[in-house]
Amino acid sequence: MRFVKGHGTENDFVILPDPDGELELPATVVAAMCDRRAGLGADGVLHVMRTKLSPEVADQAGEAEWFMDYRNTDGGMAEMCGNGIRVFARYLVDTGLAGAGEFGVATRAGVKRVRLAESGDVSVEMGRPRVLGRSHTTVAGREYEGLHIDMGNPHLACVIGDPVVQLDLSHQPAFDPEVFPGGVNIELLNPVGPRRVVMRVFERGSGETRSCGTGAVASAVAAAELAGETTGTWAVDVPGGTLTVTLDEHTSYLAGPAVLVASGELIL
Ligand SMILES: N[C@@H](CCC[C@H](N)C(=O)O)C(=O)O
Image (cartoon, rainbow, N blue to C red; front, top):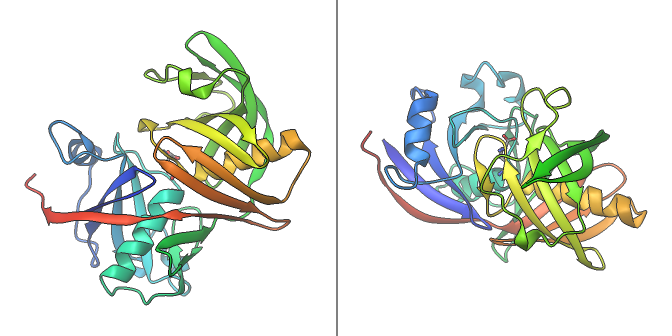
């Protein structure tokens, strides 16, 4: 099985080209690929399929030739991945499957428009974050409150007083299963300057990762709410680098580096 490996601010992915939709991807196979000791190692899998061949998203085929079928480390499907879609776009352009410039990519959360800049950064229009209320999480015995935000996938973004660098995120933080029946991505963040936050994340289905694009947008929304703002551009520092989030009245944008680092043959 051919693969390409890439990352966006060290949120890393195995890319599986499968234009004609011939691959079977049971959760066990995805989990084996993502295993950092016995497999290739990754935070998730980007399965590259023609949109028209996937019944899940075939209605998006008019706006997007390619479908990002996203899987978490545990093999579970997710609706959207902000870093993944930027790496996916980099892959499509570098392999000639899409022209440079702006184009649509199909996802389970609808078509997202991506754009490659000359600097090498890839940006994506993420849509309007939906704030659905407040909830709480417990991390290493400490309870934190945050905003429940729908980015196509579920988030709990918590601005906290404790320094996020010191948190123990080696275990699943507790959350309210009545609010998040399908699980949740949990962001912990500290504002560190005007429109700048430091964020760590515990992702649904993958554990702590070094970055999360949808989580960065949710974090900017939570920081903006605290500052009494609704629009503007935020820098989100994550363990793997820095992402830029722009919020306006109608939508949100995520930008940052997206690189391919290896390709080869997987023996599974
Ligand atoms: N790392 C991603 C989010 C991936 C999906 C997430 N774990 C979920 O289950 O919703 C990002 O960059 O947004």
